[in-house]
Image (cartoon, rainbow, N blue to C red; front, side, top):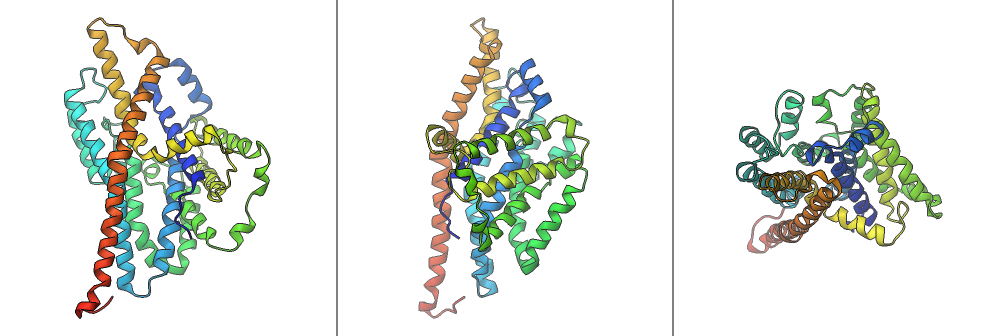
Length: 382
């Protein structure tokens, strides 16, 4: 399977992160009766599940063939080590940077109190660093203050997946698909408590299953070519987004199946995008913009809550000195927040994400090269 970047997957990342940004607008940036009304008919936290489905697909698409190509156990563990190194360099520098900056903002830029208490943020920072933020999030839900870095719960879950998934491949071997299907089925039939919500892995498992299927001949035979017709793909995307948003509302909260169905619909979107044929949105300015957002989605996800809180701090300070305050103008407040998010996420992408990602890839390459030259000095080959 090619490791070439799939632009339609980047499009889905853009949709997912914009959904999360919109979901967090109310209260975190400003209160609005309009947003409160919208939330009755549609909510957008499903963007996280779409991210999970994408992650499962993208990771398995490259990792499973790499592990299947190993002829010895030592080679297998070297591939796992390389995978963990690439993931660490890809994710941790940005995560640690914005955890640190959020904690500093809590100390030095918190007159309005938007960032919360120092005690809660220290605990939240530790949870983010040690990758147990999802468990802290479940424990704190409706009980005590989490802190400004609450979005790290989903990052912790993904990190746990990256750590355990290679071991699952090793343990399950040819039964991996059945184990993943069982994981999806059990969660579909289970009522989601706060703890089960923060360890939900059905979308991740479905993404992995999709990647495994994409390596089979039948995958091409099921390509949804009917979506090539003008506006059919866009219509399908709009319908699925509306269904996801409706299922995420409080009216479906008592049902045990809604998160499982959200995971399945997210996997359907990833399936359509996996062919990379512009089925969901045709090429043009809108798609270029959405793929740009998708390419920066990791930084946007980390940055948007600190950015919202910084805008609240800024408007609070304007109010205290008697200067014109945009707080009563939601559109202006939103534009300022979006501009800040765009600026900071582009900075993060250019100076943190890409350089450290490339450094991780170079490190893996150097480690591989050093092992290949060992036999020439008389050592035993792996």
